[in-house]
Length: 64
Picture (tube, one colour):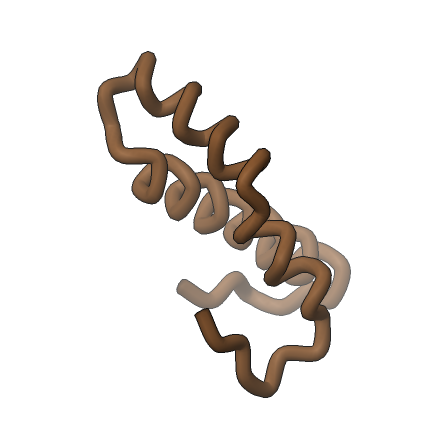
């Protein structure tokens, strides 16, 4: 996977670490969903929380 124009390489690499993937794989097995779907949903949810925090801090509306 190529990461271009990304300053926080450590974060990008964290999402690719085998141990993290294995954790999603194990948890997803119980939910009967692919680990990629589980990881993507977790990242999307986290991103929503970040956007809410920024909106509260800056008093700007949340964009979709």
